[in-house]
Structures are given as C-alpha cells and as structure tokens.
Amino acid sequence: MSSSASKRPNPRRPGEFELIARHFTRKPRHPGVVVGVGDDCTLLSPTPGYQLAVSVDTSVAGVHFPLDAPAQAIGHRVLAVSLSDLAAVGARPRWCLMSLTLSDANDDWLAAFARGFDALCRRSQVDLVGGDVTKGQLAVGVTVHGEVPPGEALLRSGARAGDALFVTGCLGGGQGGLKAWQAGERDLAHPLLAAYLLPEPRLAAGQALRGLASAAIDISDGLLADLGHICHASQLGAELDETALPLCEGLVECLGEKDAMRAALTGGDEYELLVSLPKAAQKEARERLSVLGLSLTRIGVLSSRPGIRGVSASHAPGWQHFGTDRSGEAS
Image (cartoon, rainbow, N blue to C red; front, side, top):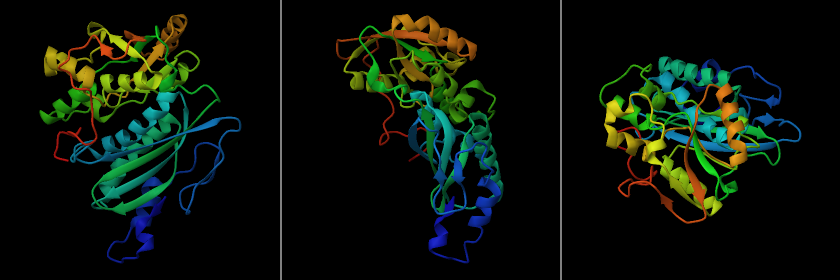
C-alpha cells in the first residue's frame, strides 16, 4: 500500500505512511504473499492449477453510502460489495487491494474504518496486500482476487431454457435499509439497516453451488436488472413469480406492500445470489445451502422466449450508475 503524497512531498500533509502502517499493515494470514504492503508492487503466488478471478468496485460517499455512516460499517461495506463478485462466480477469496481517498486523515475515523474492513477480511480469509492513500472526496476502491478450479467458475452465460431461477436469502433489504436510514434509524442491529450497511457476501454459497448452478450473478443492481444480465448473456428470457419472492423481515412494515415488492424487484444492494439450476441439481443445491443455514427460494424459470414476464410493467429495471444514487444524498 502506497501514498500518492510520496510522489509530491508536502510537509503540511504528514502522516500518510504512518497511517498506512498503523491501520492497514497486517501479517499475511496465508501463504502466497511474496511481497505485501510497503513496496511499489505486491508479489503473489496463486495456487498452481487454479484460475484467478479478479473484480474491482468503487464506493463513493454520498452515492453508495451516506456521508455520515459509521466508519466501521463503511469499512465492512466497501469490501463486502467487492467480495460479492467473487461469490457470484464461486471463487475462493485470497487477496485484496484498496485505494482510499480521504478528505481528512482523521485517525479515529480511520481506526474504526480499518476495524470494519479487517474484521471482514478475517472472516472471509482475505489478505489486504497493497493499495494507495490520497486526498480528495471520500471514496474507496477495492480490488479482490480469488481462485477457482478451471472450468468451474459460475458465469452469467451458462443458463439453459427450462432451468429454474433461485435466490439465496431474502430480497428488498438494501432498499428497506436505505429508507430506514433516511427515517432516522441508526441501530445497526436493525435487520434492514444491517442488510444495507453490513451486507454479507455469499462466498460459501457460491462455492457450494459450483458444479450445480448453470449460471449465477450477485444482485447488486436489482433483481430485474441482474436477471436481465443473465438473460442477455445466455440469450434467453424468463418468467418470474412475484408471489414467490422472499421479502426481508420488516420490509412490508417499513415500505408497505407495493413499495416492498418494488424494492425486491429493483432496489439493488442485495448482494444475494441469483442462480439458475437444472432440475437434476435443485435438491442437492438446497441441501448444500441448508448446511450453511441459508435459504434457496425458487422464483421463476428461464425460457427461450425473449423478455422478462410475470412482473408489473411499472417497475423500473434497476440501479443505474448515472441515475439516482444509493445513499439518498445528492451525488
């Protein structure tokens, strides 16, 4: 992990290297890190015979999370949304890089941010192996690296007509949590607020579904939008059953029935997995996820007929990066 200030020395902005050493330097938890934080490049040794899965996400304050969200929750969230992409392809997480842009190097804020980030690193068995710190509007970019056996990655393009559609967990929590935050809720134990600010990447589920699911995607932009990605990549259509959607606890009470359904279909920020499963694999898939304590709900079927049917035409397709923001604040 480096500092942009090292290229333009400025005595009025001291402490970047000290902050990196204090908050983001950890002894690697696993072999494979030849050179980690503290040099110009990180050197890694992937497991022989495995393919490397790499994804990057950038989270911007006021767009992807509220400016005044707890620092520890932000640290968790920025890593979770990137790890969710590894979950979607069934990869085992190994390493991550972080680019951190700060408006102010507040040591207390950084300590809390680092606690949230490192706690999820520990639970997910991920090593932070490098990155960058610079000054500007608060934003965090996280690049994750994972490993998957050759030919076993879950892709968007593998679905077949007749495969059933399933989702893990429940839907609508991201949108419900945002509304709860806007209404003044600040208790992170609130189930909807936790779903929004402390999402859990479904890493174990993704790995458990390897060899069973024909296609998969994480629900980050909304169920309809992400189902559309699978349909486009697999050149298929879909028939959804709105009545089968598993709504998160408290969602109807928070939003009302109509808006709860809209949140489940288009709200985004779910980070559950949407998967297609052939009939022969469905029983085994449910059993594997049951061992993980995670539900798997059938919500529809894929077909050769183009388009997504079974939903109200009034529902927007989902999150757009240059449309409204996710934090409820001006972007």
